[in-house]
Image (cartoon, rainbow, N blue to C red; front, side):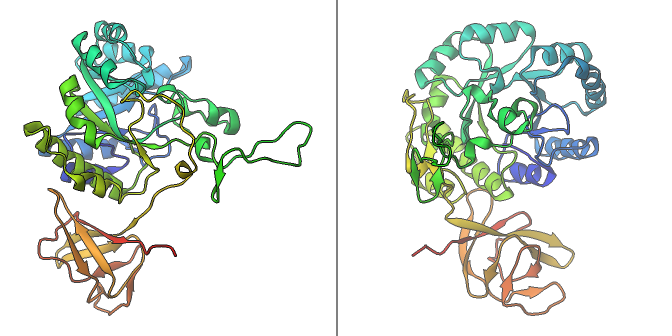
Length: 395
């Protein structure tokens, strides 16, 4: 699971992650995620060690010649933490890790766009332990891949998909001087565009649109919850969820669903629960797709793809102090609203917002972002649970 900051890491661990991946302030591919200072990393290492959860650090940016001294200095500081693996894409970074911290496991990022077993053998001989497969591979490709390599294989099963091959995109750098391959993508693939003919610059034309606008590059989101049995049978060792920039609610929801799915499908590959997909639909996302996995590698252009689907709002985060449970407001809700509490192990229960008051005891008619509240909660509520509310349907 992704861990964009320390709170999201704690949430991923609590909701069922076997491993979390995160970045420092340098050399990862999410410059604008919360990221981790060395002090944060020490805390993260303690949390994951106590929970028996692996921790992987992303070092998958493409480095320039003058940056390797800083990389070596960072690796020296990281050695005492004994992180479980580094995620890399640059052969120069891998070589530097082998020199500075030769005992550390190395995972190859999807940024390396490894599409064949011969590439896996190259990385294995270079000292890598695990390979994150290119997202462009089909299920048949993955099956053949697994039969011809000794490396552990990992694949993305959920989250945003880049419009470029394995995320190696130059659109942001070209339009906004912010390089995606340096961790600073401004996501121009999700901007609204119009086409202009050279001799008629004042007459922009829409190419494919709905009432929201026109999006040339905007891609769907990946969701392979129903394909997990096929991926297990094909020989994939590790499933990865995209989203270090996503919300706490996203992390909790994806972790609890994929945790439950993996555990149940491992025992019975036919036990597909419709609730999994139903729950994943309740997180803000673009329309879901299976990507290239099923061999449908045609470019898809649909007006419905140009928007995010948001059916529910994350309205509160449950915390505990010496006086009991309280709620940190994240979105507005009103007294009498129907809310739903969600927790690990697929716990969830609807309830009515009642007895809302401040920590000092003042009664309120609503909860708002950043409010600290006490309110009536289901009996099983605990520190780290989340509260959501279904959005009213638009007329």
